[in-house]
Image (cartoon, rainbow, N blue to C red; front, top):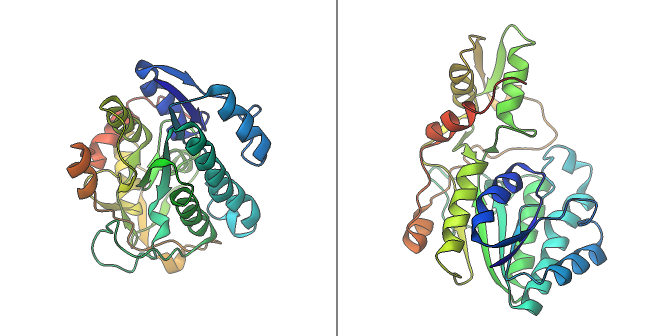
Length: 283
């Protein structure tokens, strides 16, 4: 199987590079070779690799900065995705693409299903939703996998931010009224590798997040407990946390369709945290 992996330097991309390697020949160009702000670069890399599967882990993920950098967010998260879809169609390749819980407004009381109407609250969510629409209209075979609260042992993410802050502050103040399921990059990579190993699926949209739920406050406490750090974590409402971009209060995703289609159910978020925490020695 010839696989083109984008975004190798990111959290999910790095995990995918390791997990996809046993499946065949993986081409994973860096940013210097594959520039998502340059359409010609995208075309050249895809056509040179001639992949049977494209796994797109590249994304603009700076949620707050996107409020001021709308054009860049849409260029990477929507326009480049549409172009990848067109190239995949030309080659007859499958395109696996990652989206986010932030396509929803968070006002629903129960976990979101794939049939629920999106309503993003911020530019990042709007750009990711636009990417979904572009891919669905590109005419290629695709898998869109929406996930949530992604983190890893490396990179910029909530887990590493909490560990760093705990060394600098006497107490942490963390939002306690936003719910979600922290999902490790390796959980995602293992699931994608399993799907591809078992054959080329039909096009579709699926939710892929860890089991269970918590709040950002609960996640922060669990992170510090796993690291045996006793810095207090004070719960606060969203109204006391100032940020450029609004976040959904409910980020929970219903993963039933994924399990029915592929027999895949991601582990509980606590299990993922234990695994990732065991790989972090120090910041």
